[in-house]
Length: 597
Image (cartoon, rainbow, N blue to C red; front, top):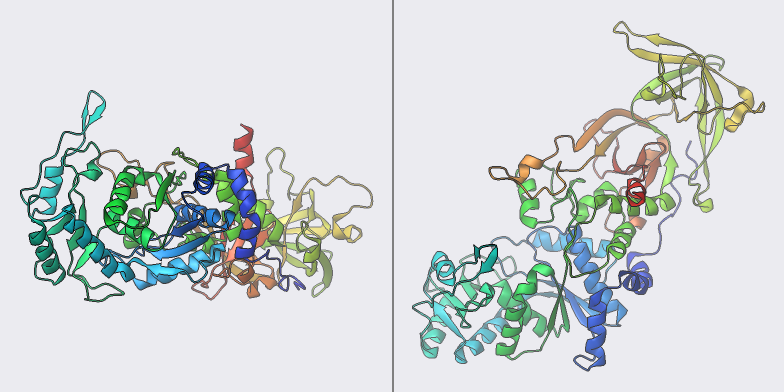
């Protein structure tokens, strides 16, 4: 039935090859300031090479915001002939897990990025970090504090708004700030040995409790946590804080350019302070604006909340902005790379319309997706002048955008399925589909004319009758009749039962995280974000359709259900064993209309 339909290798180059080919063009298109900074550093001799890193924390799955950071990290290394490490900043034993590590590695590979065996873990640096902390204590620049977490926050002070001007009144020194070096060294060792309870003591940097930047007011370097780490087990009872660990891990790996999102700009003075006081490799931090998208949240905390409250089926729910969710919905790595090159890199926060991602998806899927016919709400059409058991072989194009995609055979039989919406008993104006006396063109088939219809006792149309014109095979009328409507269809004898899942925005608000007092993020959940259509039908070749996997486009197949949109097979079948197809994006080009306005 679908000869040649599933034997095609319509995938582009591998992700890494494609990325390397596109890296220079994407960087030039972005016109980003980071490239200028890196170039100047090389020209003035600050560094003689480029070495970046992508440093996810293994406490959740990667989302599309990480995709932007990842692209920038690997792109800068590729553009300047450097290297990019994959480092897991795993210093929070309460939230991290090996399963997150594996999920992150899978997604990085799927996007086409290769860290070349440079896989590192901050947890491997615990001894190195401890020794760096000891050096800072010996310089009199760190002390062990007995204040509780709440007291530290109170002593530090908070920013206040006076007449719409933010001020930061001076903080207060901890009563333990004056401890001597030897006492601090002894207490810090005893913290490591597990002598004290959780929260009993912390190690803090001694900087300036009057500093206008609250981050610089004696930040905590180490805390006591009697939690087993997924890699180090019970070997450590103290764990470094992110602001201390991150710059020193960068230095340990010889990272020249530590590329971070804009919220870390206020942390840059502390980043430089730790590097200077620990006397390590002088990595440079550069910030860029993070990705914000309409109808989307990109906070791991919020995404975890959605999973834990079962508002979604899991991290890979097709409505989630995680890379796994996007992949399951049918998003391709190539479309994501195109999306990242279009949004560019800047220092200014902005919000990207999700319609742009849809545009990139259509652009990519239009080239690779095989065309098939599917009927989501079936209505039987009986061809009265075709004998029972008769089969007429027709030819259909697999992809008009790709001549190499070939053609497939479909069968025209006496009973076929059409869409319920393609028939009207009393049609409205400019309705060009089937109604009594009207003719339409069956896609790849014949011109048919409606003769009558049947209803059940409730008054619902259950079947339509028509005659076909044998001289119009392929849809061409020899008498030059003007047929305005073309509809898709399926042979009733050959149709494959499927389940179709139609997805909308997970949230009703453009900025779902902005909620009024008394409301939460969950109040913005869209109750209609998923429609499950059971009893849908499709061409039988879809029985062998392959869902996308970590190999990217080469590991899956993409389809355009004609007149409906782009679909991909879900990895799991429906409750009745029928194959499930997720709608990736509609055919309507919303983004083009937005740009036109």
